[in-house]
Image (cartoon, rainbow, N blue to C red; front, side, top):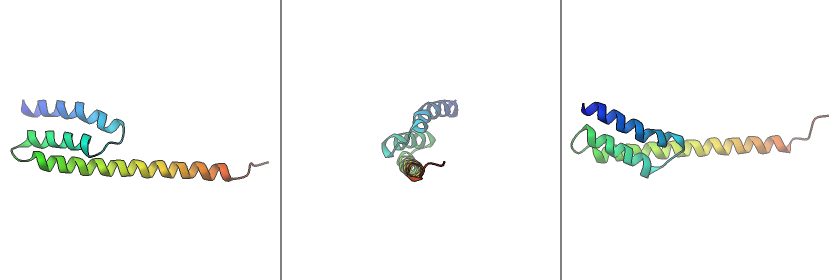
Length: 82
């Protein structure tokens, strides 16, 4: 029963986390909740892991956005084909 509740809570909390790139606060809170549900003293470890995951995803999304912007700039700088 406990794992069913944990799965449901994590599913509800994880959906907004994947909707847009987050950071330490949002993903750390999800990790802390998951760590707390796993056992005594694991909330801090879960929060740290969630924070690290959020920072990684944010950096990955920023890198993808900058690459897309660079590709658009390169495409607009080329002369039109005749």
